[in-house]
Length: 106
Image (cartoon, rainbow, N blue to C red; front, side):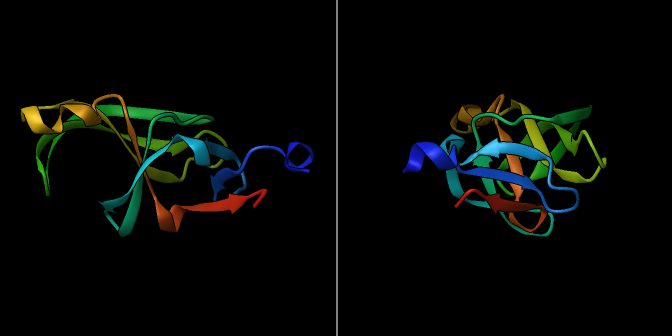
């Protein structure tokens, strides 16, 4: 039966564009600009903004904002570089804010 439904997805809350798979969640214990956020291994149908250094709760990181490619809503950011050794696992991963994504095919 599950094969008929397809993968569990997360979509942009604004336009419904598919942006990630449930199976790509690494952690649900992150903080975004507007509350809780999820760390994803991959994201799709997004555009990535310019890189900038930001002081986050876990230290200095180089990040780039992530936008929905359809409606241009800011959904979170991509970790480009972590300066602290304990934070290196985040490099190349995506933060998508819980308030900016919705579940689909659940």
